[in-house]
Every structure is written in structure tokens, then in C-alpha cells.
Image 1 (cartoon, one colour):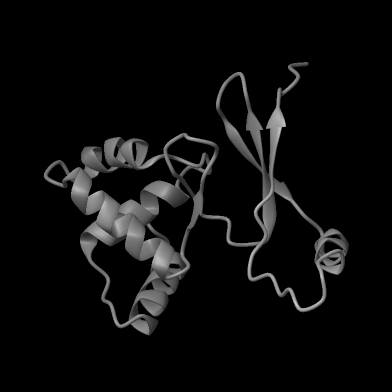
Image 2 (tube, rainbow, N blue to C red; image 1 turned 180 degrees about the vertical axis):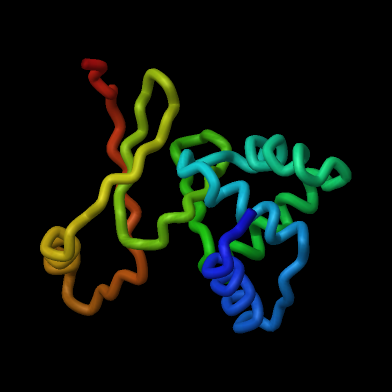
Amino acid sequence: MLSDAKTDTLNRKLSAAGLRSTRQREVVYDAILSKRDHPTADEIFARVKKEMPTISLATVYNCLDTLVQCDLVKHVNIDRESTRYCPNLNEHAHFHDNDSGTIYDVQLDEDFIGKLKAILPEGFEPTSIDITLRGKVQQN
């Protein structure tokens, strides 16, 4: 269940877009926030079905589109895989473990982001940064 602060954030961002909160949007948003694993729509659908058995996959997709539109979650696209959803709205990179398919957040500090912006040609103004590293997670 969403905390009061997360419910307030959801309501505020939806309202700013001229939308209202619905039970379906709350449940889908909670399913993404409850586990920071970059789930696909199908994975979110499976989680949500436990709490809301009558929800359809189409409704989950519509909720996800709304959450992305309202800057509550981000799309994460890795090659030709299904789109995944990330609740981390800070500028960050992703590490894709080729063996397991798991995606991990990699925090980027302000100095690094500044250096990336500095190498752009004059007049280029990024609105977001998408960096994906691929490899293998070494098991200890």
C-alpha cells in the first residue's frame, strides 16, 4: 500500500496533468515502487492481479502510460526487450546483467553529469540522460 507521501506525490502529479487518481493507478504505481527491479508491464500485471483480480493488461498499460506522462516513472528500453519501468527519477545509469537480465540502477554524481553535458556540441541542451552499461555481475 502506498505511503501518504507517495499517495500525495501521485495525486499532485496527476492533478497537474488534469487527471485524477484512480484505484488502478494507485495499485500499478505501488507495484512499481514496492520492488525496485525495473519490471515489465507483464510483471506489473502479475503483481497487480493479486490485489485487483479484475484488472486487465490493457488497463495496466494505460496506467503505465499515464505514470510515465506525469513523470512518476521512466521507460527503460534495453535492446529489443520489453519496455521496463523505473521509479528512480534522478539522473542515473543502468547496468544490464547479460546473464540474468537483471537491471541495476547506477547513481551518477553531479560532476559526472556536468562532464557529459560539457562534451556536447554548442547549442545542445539535454533534457535527460540515458546510459546503459552491459556486462556480467561477478558473484563473490
